[in-house]
Amino acid sequence: MHDVDIRAATATDHPFLVDMLVEAVNWLPERNWSRERILADPALAHYVTGWMRPDDIGVVAAEPAGRPVGAAWLRHLTAADPGYGYVSDDVPELTIGVVESWRGRGVGRMLLRAVLEAARARGIRRVSLSVERANVAAGFYATEGFRTVESFENADTMVADILA
Image (tube, rainbow, N blue to C red; front, side, top):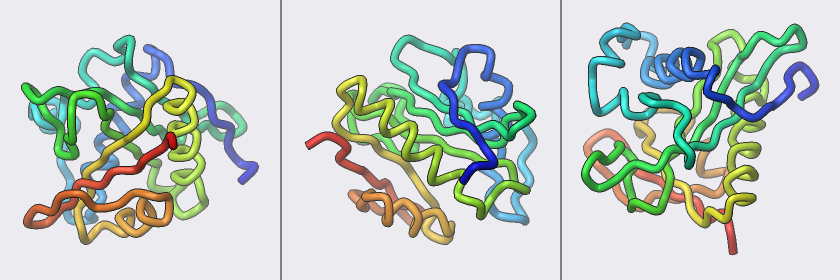
């Protein structure tokens, strides 16, 4: 796709990462959780609170005029404050969001591949995520090498081995 450029995320991208967390949470059309509700929920807010920590890795997709249209980032969460896709303290968890009008154009795939490449460059061996089973993204993640390692009522934790 030539409509976007991928760049490394910086500390100044925090507000946009919050926007993309809102997009990720509200993937269902009937779910319309506000930014305030998401940031007030510790189980969701920890994906962006304090961005950018030294071990955070992220990428942003921007359209030709420079406006961001999507982001993917990895964050190490701990057993004391686990994410929905928590596997272990040494496995960072992926969050990805794309502006609705840019979905279905390959932006998510570009972001995923770029953030995994950045993780490989840092020596990270595995990445995890949580995806609701009804979300079409579950199939997308499977095509990119993620496999289900734990299942819950409506969601799966998936892991990809990114270094041999």
